[in-house]
Image (tube, each protein chain N blue to C red):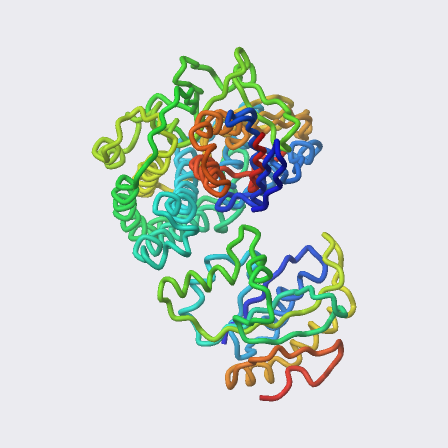
Length: 171
Length: 436
């Protein structure tokens, strides 16, 4: 399984995905390959042949409480294509890459998104306490998360309130 | 796209001009079937890079200006270091100049591959996007992806990373690459050279509208190199100047409808054209042999005044960039020092280099501590806006009776031939059409 942390390291809670990948790297062997992507675009196509499962970890904004975690298979009807497209500043986000991969007949691995609800994304801001807690929880539960995603799909988006230690849930 | 119609006026809005970098729009007004007004209105926020640079140490300038664009950061670095080296009276050794050209080759490869296949080709083949085109042209899109990757890999090896390289400094490079590192690119570049020739065959067969205005083409020129980094500036209307005279001949001015400045000839206010078509028209004899052979045999008569054939010019330059990259690597010997030594002093200097989408001019004044007192950056897209408006004024009268969607498509197709980088120029897309 490959974990791709996305975000902007200098924009407060938007750094959550990158921070999770960084901390997992510090742990040593977490059982997953790790990659940081500050501007995911068409280069994501190169990742598809590398693995059978890819988990994207990124900040999300839905209006709920900061630090809420969301877990879903991709593509998901519950997530706007526009939101996935907006992962890239040049309009080539995951949604476009998936379309292109389909058009080219490429094999696409099983894809998942772990979203972390943001509080502040101001330039230069520190991560909020709620998102910091969520980052810690994901790192702590990475083994359970890996087991879950290797074994099953997450067809209905799961959400976990801040501090909900039932994350990532059961198969 | 939305429309607001009254008895006298018809307004059409296209929220975004797609397949360009950045955000802006087109405003078109007609009365009684006559075209009255065309404006390319850039609404991307101004970015104030020239102001950011004031007070910064001169060695920070290449890294800061690289952030202006993710597609052509090398161009900003190259114009910056050449202008600052002029101010500091530094002359890097020939092997450093060659490495800089190699870095530029990487940028031209990735940028031209992106524009040819992913942004521009769908216009001529009748697709909404490269994704839609990929289903019918998978071989071509796969070729584009691999070409772009090779260009980015060259940037990563020489520049430290594939986007916004970090190895360039005033005087040379922070670190020179090992010969083995560069040689590791040879197989990819040989493949890219053949793929570039296939690209030229592909784009030469596309159907182009017949439109050949009397452009003033402007580009950098060098006595024995295809223009990239140096030296004079020439035009198809007889201009032949040193970079120091650029601002005397070509003026930037603010226009109310745009957050990007517009450039014109200073003496008569006319528009001019920068980009691959200008470079080839003014420097065709400096192309590398296989690129020149391709240009001569592709069915285009040079000089070419049809802006839609800019895609052919890009394909010729794609061949050139691959060929020159291979030649530079073949000749490369690791230098004893990666950069020239020099003393910091007060001074002022300017330079023009050739970004993938056209001439890019920088001027800096620094004080005795090496802090920037003044900066001016004139990007290629800002220089082309005036020309794009003139083109639309020439083309639109012939299509005003068509549907709003068709008029929008005509506007977008013309503008995309320039490969505009709106983010770079703000200091597009949305069509607003008023019919009276």
